[in-house]
Length: 340
Ligand code: NAD
Ligand code: TYD
Image 1 (cartoon, helix red, strand yellow):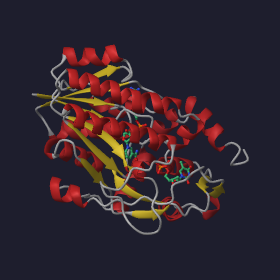
Image 2: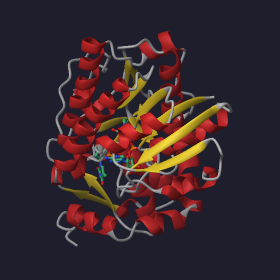
Image 3: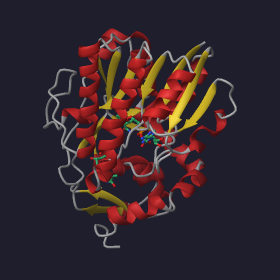
């Protein structure tokens, strides 16, 4: 039985990844190392908690001793590092936790994996490391790195560490870079779950600037299938891009959400723009298609409808999250902008 160490498995993408792995790889064990920050929610994996192939370790990837103990107590065949501070707006308010977890945490994981001779390490990264596009063109794996936010700068630093470990130590690292994910279990600070949950209770939705910024949306399970393909069939030392071939301006997406939820456009509230807001992300994933045989399978309209249905039938999940620490962030982020 193979054992994969997943970090950040209680977050949005990590929890979807673990569930998919347990469904599709019956002979595999998963160890999930998660700090349970505001974004880590053990409820996301409540349905698989008692599966004998799954073990949860509560801890911090920045805690060297703890991370090393996991490698010494288990024979780990692969690491998939999802653990990160992941929200751009929070990185603008305070970049400290981003530097700590995304950079220092990655370095500690790399060192521990290297000492334990782990045969494969996959770093889950983002298209945001490439910076921003104008109206034309796509990010390829060769696009120069030009991060614009503290979040993307910290992710870029981590990617460069993985690259350097591969180059210097022949470390068996692979990097994947994906565009904006949507799907179930996404923390309601990101555009789709924030807007859906606000609209569910007839609250306004805060569109930054004129809503002209473009994102390329991919269903989280397509991303998870890409990570799986890169982990099993990717070439060591390589980077693989994933995207959904689904570019939308934020305002187009917002109007689509209003349409599906049958809400009036008066609920759109234009607020001041995000500082340094990247204009457009778009991904060329032909390398992943060619080398990994991967391509996105979920059609956006279907995936969006399923995602909205999931949030509608999991109102309690949202309710529990939209309290306490999250409310405080929401007030700090939107209080002045919304004139609340
Ligand atoms: P998320 O914020 O939902 O989850 C992050 C998880 O990491 C949480 O469970 C949290 O508790 C855990 N974590 C944070 N700091 C930790 C630490 N120091 N030690 C251990 N665990 C810690 O994030 P997500 O959206 O699921 O993103 C997962 C990864 O995918 C991130 O690396 C992110 O940069 C990358 N990514 C995300 C997207 C996207 O659209 N969400 C797109 C491309 C890449
Ligand atoms: P987000 O979900 O934060 O992802 P990212 O910044 O990593 O792309 O935001 C997606 C887009 O939506 C981005 O252009 C910023 C915009 N946005 C808003 O207009 N209003 C909001 O309240 C949020 C959270 C995002």
